[in-house]
Length: 151
Image (spheres, helix red, strand yellow):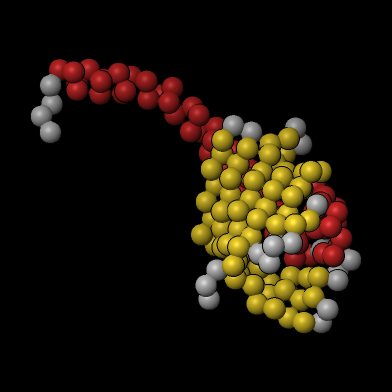
């Protein structure tokens, strides 16, 4: 590409504004780190069946979608885990991406592990989409949808 004065002026303007442009990125970076910490707290609470921990990271209007198509509200999601009628024996989160958009965040990742329900152990290999909402007391899971992945 041939550089001309117009290109140089645009490059100079972009360079001059770069410190200002970095501010939202830095803010997004700290929000993304806080969202990542909230995802980790959710994972730990799910593994432990920790009712208080699950309540702390979920929004009161939670919509929780399972890979089989079942949709649950906050209470329906938390009760089986806290009552130990459905447990996760292991959970491994990988390939996670976080995109912060204002007071919302979109998280995608792969979840592999094992769950147990009614004495039956099941392998888990699902994709997850989560929507988190920034609240005064931290990031809260507002929506989650799982989908099956090929083995």
